[in-house]
Amino acid sequence: MQELPEELPGWWNKIYLFDKNIIPTRYIFFIDLDVVILRNIDEEFEYIKRADVIYAQDTMDLMSSSLLIVDRYSKLASDVLENFNLNTCLQTCVGDQDYFSRFINEKNPKVLGLPCKFHYSYKYLLDYDNWRAKSNNSNFFEVSINDIYMLNFHGFPKPHDIAANPEN
Image (cartoon, rainbow, N blue to C red; front, side, top):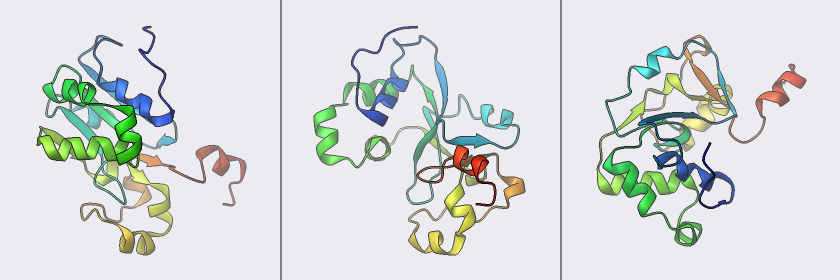
């Protein structure tokens, strides 16, 4: 395992997912630790080679970095890495998703947002009407728990909170 060139604060370390020198493989499939896999996700691997970056749809925005499939040999991956400046991002970006979204929107690369059933927000599942009113993503819609592949526990509660308190 290769050491990271520089330790970055928190989620900003995701920038290294785009670096083919860290782990020299072409494709990397990344899932955040607060994502629970509910069903077989083999179908997601069928999307590899269709885009430079594949991302999960997000409730509030268009892109979530909780699930990324990155072609690290693509021009997009090298551009994302080479244009990254932590100080600029800390001043102008809300977080890594904001940086990735802005960059992807500006460069118009070959990207693919997975249908929302693949990566669904726990909060959205519980309170669809409230979240729908706040959502900026018209592609995100209500899905039955039986059709969801992965459930994202961004924010609170986390999966271990649910397991410890099943009544919640």
